[in-house]
Image (cartoon, rainbow, N blue to C red):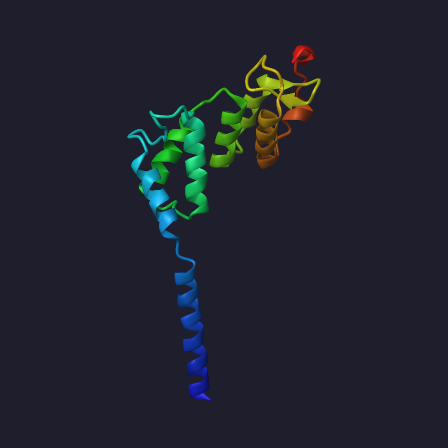
Length: 163
């Protein structure tokens, strides 16, 4: 009986260790994470001088990627979070990405309000811009993540007739 229990314990441990090894990240993922770490700027943001990538969007996306890959114990993740927390973006997509990445529930969704076209129930990139699907989708994701009552408590001006 004791030997059977011992075999079961060793077999269970073997499968736990083997499954952990099998779930290890591929060399491509490890190289990609290393690239991201090496391309972070000294202030904690991610951007690229050789291609036109918006810094807030790039930083939020890298942080989400590191979270998915369980790479959040690294100092680059912490400095990226600190950089993103210090930003006050104006564009709807960037405000929404910041809210989603940081898990904000502090009223930050009010920053989405100026770009809301109340007649269409949609968002444009900035105040006065035509409503579009991408900015509307980002705004809705952010509002859902914060359980915002933004739409229920505010009546924006009807500027949307021209959007």
